Image (cartoon, rainbow, N blue to C red; front, side, top):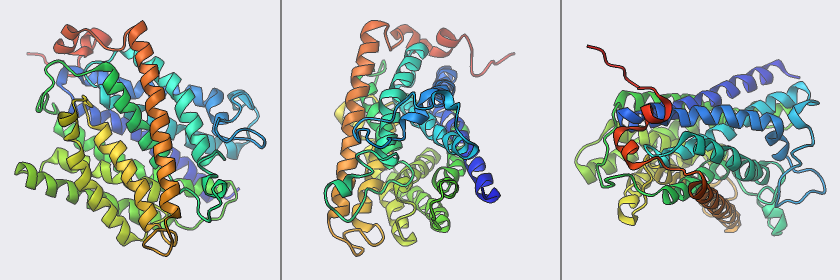
Length: 408
């Protein structure tokens, strides 16, 4: 075992784990002051529950063994509780756990200000089990997406280096489903709530950008532990920097044109959109194409967040507009500009075909399962708090705490 690869894998695991508190800060600052504790607890609840499920059986489910169906998942009981895993396998598993955690946490932004914590925890556990774990197996663990190109007789494979489909499209589609199940917030209209703490949002975005270098480049260490040669870490780091920076510019330019002002919330949102888009593409684009991807994604996502007002779904913190749309852009963009295989970079339409099948396959599966699961919870124990509790602020009702205890 190479000590450098091992050290980087452990460090990357810590970086990606830190991203979920980053999501909590980012989302927490965007909601009203009386909902900040509830909003952040949705992320911390996901950290606790999904990590436990991952160690018990989730890690096993993400690897499809020989002879098992490519359309299902690995055997959850093949090494229950990771009792027989060696040291390298445990490090790789811990890294994978952080992806599962943040995917579930991202969904929570769509149901801000109006979700019951217990119901969310039930949803998080079941969603991780029947959606994230199988989808991760499909994308990275030998499933149908991993083998899609070969199954279609093509010379290309689906490119999703760090989670455009498995993380962002997956989370964004589920967020849309839950937004529809829980319905609109009381008084839903443009400008319903202003972010109560802008510095908290910027802090969250900064932590996310910091941790994203582990998210994208962390796989380099795990590849080495698996014995897979790969030397694209420099490209990954530059693209993670460049696409994100360009997306900030794309977002605030559109914001300036559309609303007359470039805002700090827009800059933070643009950064996250750029990070989302470069996630699947970080190892497969030349830096110039990564800059263009960021610029386009920032601009398109700045416009996409307006869709909820036109279409009437209450995605409170724009998970759909940033993660679903950004994930789709990053995944499909590879069909045009992936190095050597993109339509305009030496290849043909094959790359675009497999990218589209993978993206929309995950989108449909995640949306349908999340909708059915959310609907079942809402019709049984209830998923949404009472209107009067929503108006008062859910922190004291659900958690018995206040985000800001102001004393004379």
